[in-house]
Length: 341
View 1: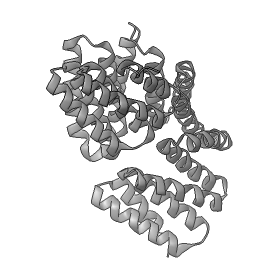
View 2 (view 1 turned 30 degrees about the vertical axis):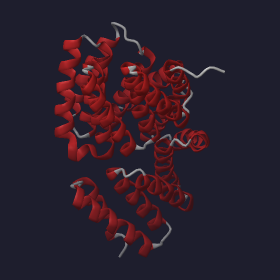
View 3 (view 1 turned 30 degrees about the horizontal axis):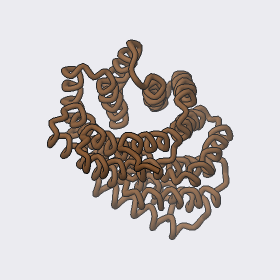
View 4 (view 1 turned 45 degrees about the vertical axis):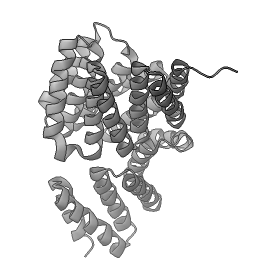
């Protein structure tokens, strides 16, 4: 059998990505990257590195994603490929945001706005939508809801003109808008956007995207008071997340399950779910998520009357919140610690 070409290796990587097999994607993309460098196929090499960034990101391995994004930027500069430098810089900013958005928002915002201007100059509609999507999504998460909504709406308007990834963009943009509306307390709109996001993810076909859209819907159902429905959605995601080693998807599902089970009056199951979410958050080195999971553990332990264990978890949450400047989480930890006395 003849040796596979770089393009064939990249195609294998792409097929594994579309199937949600991100470890398989990385396996083939790494081989493609090495082969491309040996044969001076610059664009094939850059594509192979870029898909590795995306695969690591979908696994929740943000440090690995940062390393790959840095490599992509370095190689793109060397080859004079401005389009790949643009995507590499965006991917780097996204990974930094996943690790600690709140404390790096000013830096990330600046990088993405500069990238948006470059995307428009290059006439790259895909990159324009990607930058607007991330700006909008990150903005509302740090409390800039009005600006976040404007950016997301602008991205939707561009999407109407057509892109290479219409179903994917409809999924991520509507999921972001659902989160924003949920934060505003507009559950009707949050549900509408979540249902559009799920339909678009199913149309795209990547099972990881479908699971993520189901989590978006589950969060809305919780906000609407439909706790059993939310729990059913979160439970349904876990088997595949574990099988495919989608660690960040598993973490999100377990965290949500912990919160729901506590609210439904099942503190023992809630504590187990919260502990698993905490373990994953720490393994993935996610700063704010670690604090949120500690608070969730503390609440479940309080419900179980295991006050000393609850106090330890909540003191840790309070300390980390103070170190990382999370005033809201600090206040919640203080409030819960009073109940430990």
